[in-house]
Image 1 (cartoon, rainbow, N blue to C red):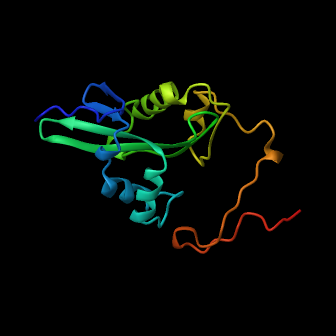
Image 2 (cartoon, rainbow, N blue to C red; image 1 turned 120 degrees about the vertical axis):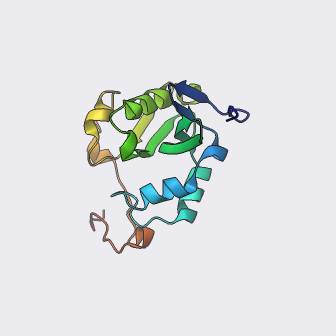
Length: 168
């Protein structure tokens, strides 16, 4: 197998048989769509929506490299202006590759990325991975009453009501 290097400007980090890369050309939309469309946060998301989200993000692909080639086994997206704010999204490691510290390595690599230094604020939403993110300094918002969200009904084909109907 020929060694695959990063595209111009892309970051690549190796750890044993795994590679983390920001090269968008490496991303496997089939793997990403299969996982996200069946996740609690992306249930029903279309492949087209995923492609658009990747185009507007800094994506970190996680790959398992063998003599037969490489296969994508994880992802994290950072939606950011690279100056003041970053939102961490769509973080996953496929089940067969969990328990090897890959999620921790993924988050370590993201927060150390040179283009993401000096940001004023990082944000994320999780239902079940609080302990992972706390290790890296994420906490509940200091002023949760200042945060707002807009949840349009019908996201990804689901008919869900917004969390609150309250208005000012």
